[in-house]
Amino acid sequence: MWDGAFDTANQVNFQERFNQPEEGWVARHHKIFKRVDVPAFGNYVAYFEQYAGDPPDVLVRQRLYVHSVDVDAQQVITQIYAFRGDDADKVVGAHEDPVALAQFAPGMMDKLPDGCAIR
Image (cartoon, rainbow, N blue to C red):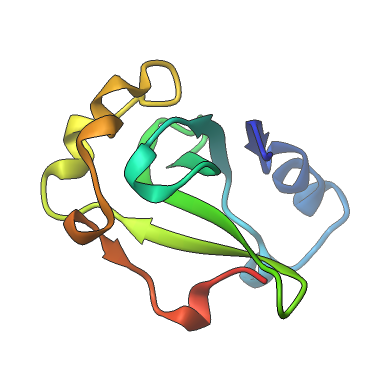
């Protein structure tokens, strides 16, 4: 369920090598997904951190991805939740130590609009 680290380093390296126009270049990002136990959100929850820069050392985004099944539509739906205010600071590195995430519930976070859901 998405566990792992993903990096755009190879894509970034190929942009110059293959003479792609700079205005279309993709910036380097390092993304970490880790399945975590956050009971208030259900059984299938992943914590996400995204870093930017080269090397990617600037934390730019943290989210919870909550997976569920819509039986009628026969789809897996992933809703995305953002931390509010300084709550994100309290859980930096939760992919390695997810204990701090257990305190969160859906009403304590901002659910991204349904158009942001992954189907």
